[in-house]
Length: 221
Length: 255
Image (cartoon, rainbow over the protein chains, first blue to last red):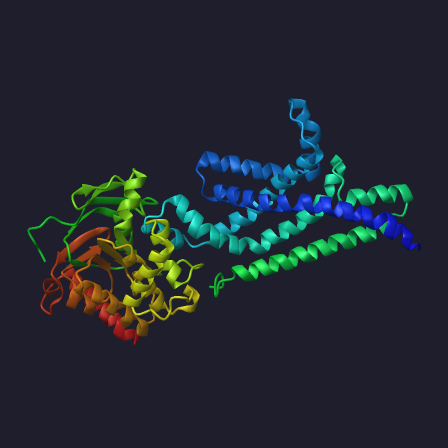
């Protein structure tokens, strides 16, 4: 086993890919989560037309493979005059996909909040929007956090699909080298390790966040 | 207490049908400043629904509500929200905001609804919590408080909005017997301080000593109303008294 292959070729390429992966994951994770919160709320409490639209969105993006969504965004949209670069198409695809999944977790947790919380807010003159924003959603997010964290971990892994639409990230960089050198085993073992580290860091971050948002006794009754 | 003045709250002909069942059959009442009206009656009589129809938490099918001569147009959201700020409501199961501590529970509506500054809201909230005897518990979360303390926080939360009237929906029914006293004593102080209230309760002793008028509700109608002496005295032959005697018997059996 020659270390030069690793130090001169593989690691620099993977680090370059890692940077791209992180550039994909962070905005997709944050915006996807926010989208999921909004869509989940609309799916639960929206008026019928809004709710139907939000449900349709969730059905489509949870019901079709992410690869198909990415292909359509990158290769399909030009047919109607919309040209996205690979990075943008990938981020949009990830946001839409993870937003759909997040919305499901948020919806479930919203339904678990007792109706009395909303009644109490209303009885003090909160508008529906304010009651949602200050009372209901903050509680729902806390309950949904384990599920949403899970979705973010999925996102880290499915961000590897970006290379299929030519946005060369961690997996893409690795695959190029593997194809050129035919050293698939070494390359993909190292790639796997990179993802493991990413996911571990994300899990730790999420744990920390969960701890920070913890409220004594909340959700245990 | 009948007085020549105009009622502070007037409710007329509230009707509500839920799931094919007629819950309220044209219920009306007038509430005067400083008055404590007590609503009693068997569970399922429509007491909670009636109270929640007054501030439109449950939209009545029919009926009108006036606060100080102004009829509430519940379809105008702005009017409705302004009206609700003036009507404090206390729930049987407290409904404290579970993600906020006692102080924040009281302060949040001051900040987000009344648009007070953070500091002013905080000061006001602390004062209200001290008033219900919880000045040393302001940083505790609902799950860390006893039932009686939770209900007192919820009373402080309603009082902080400076309401013109209060609707109390069986505020002690979810409490362990030994915790009822602390909540009743807060309500007693409110009554003595001149707060205008409608109280749904099964606390007969409390009713007897403090109510200005007793309303007995059954099957969606107020079927008797009058002073506690008239309805609850030994020799009264009222449905109200029968009900209260039954309650007492049940209570004694269970002890």
